[in-house]
Amino acid sequence: MNPEAKGSGVSSVQGLRVPFRDLRVTDPVRRAELIEAVDRVLSHGRLVLGPECAQFEEEVGRYCGRRYGIGVGSGTDALYLALRALEIGPGDEVITTALSWIATANAIVLTGATPVFVDIGEDLNIDVERIGAAITSRTKAIVPVHFTGQICEMRRIQEVASANGLVIVEDAAQAFGATQNGRMAGSFGEVSCFSMNAMKVFGAYGEAGAIVTDNERLRDRLFSLRYNGTVEKQDCHWPSLNGRLDTVQAAMLLVELEYLSGKIARRREIARMYTQRLAGTVQCPVERLGNRHIYYAYSVLAERRDALMQHFAAKGIETQVQHPLPMPRHTAYRERFSADVPVADRVSRRLLCLPNQDNLPLDHVSYVCDGVEEFYAR
Ligand SMILES: *Cc1c(COP(=O)(O)O)cnc(C)c1O
Image (tube, rainbow, N blue to C red; front, side, top):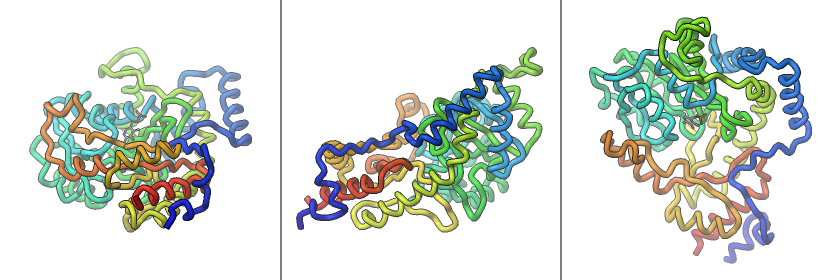
């Protein structure tokens, strides 16, 4: 069968370009709202922790069902400051997954603590069965990562944590708006961390992040830690960095929050289309029972991945690998920490993220599917 004859027929269109993501704002209504939000900030001039920051913190806390939100400069800041607020540091071990953006490991290492990498399961998240074996007398915390936008098996993780007196710091950077049995990402940790960098589903127009918690003492500590560890902005109690949320980003994020449920719905629709067409050809993501995956990434496992990427490139389709190296395999860490993570090693060689941004036209989704089918029909 001629593969060109399948699908929507868009594959016959010459010169079609499918970018992995396109961050331009083309919807005129949303664009006007964003410009107006920035304009308001320019008018009031309270650029440093302005009123939009406080409003953003309140709305993010409420969205996640938490008492407090703390705006920070990035997801990396969020994780690092959360661990610092919990007084995790040298001599402590922190259990996390092998497969995440390197920020997760960096945040742990920068506190002086030692990351202990646990292998992943078929949902690409930390394999809860393997956490027990990683616990030692030095273990202080677990940092589960809701990788690609799907929440980890949190009930099991909470059981292991409470049985061993460990605190959970949720890395929900990829999962704002994801749910598990009706509970929001960010509602499972003692402290929970988000990134709102421009690439995330709930993204700013630059760098931004947030932390949520129900613990007032931790909130106050975090307010201090995000501003050089100062109290009353004058006296430094705990050496730290400047990780404040930018007021312009907060203002724009308040607009974006209104669009979030539509964006998630669209990503889920794209995921449904991909899975329907491709399930027999590549290994599609599995949404676990009870989960609402937000598909920050639509990650398939593909045989001959690199050749498939080249085939896509020749068709004008841009794909990405998130992430080509498991965290313990990065140059900074591979000789420093041993990690026996065969599943993550194997998966990272086959992982491929297909374009799935909410503004991706559905005929482009078909065109991507055509590309996969052509490649494996050869
Ligand atoms: C994006 C991301 C981070 C870091 O967030 P930044 O805002 O880029 O600093 C941390 N963890 C995970 C899982 C991420 O995807």
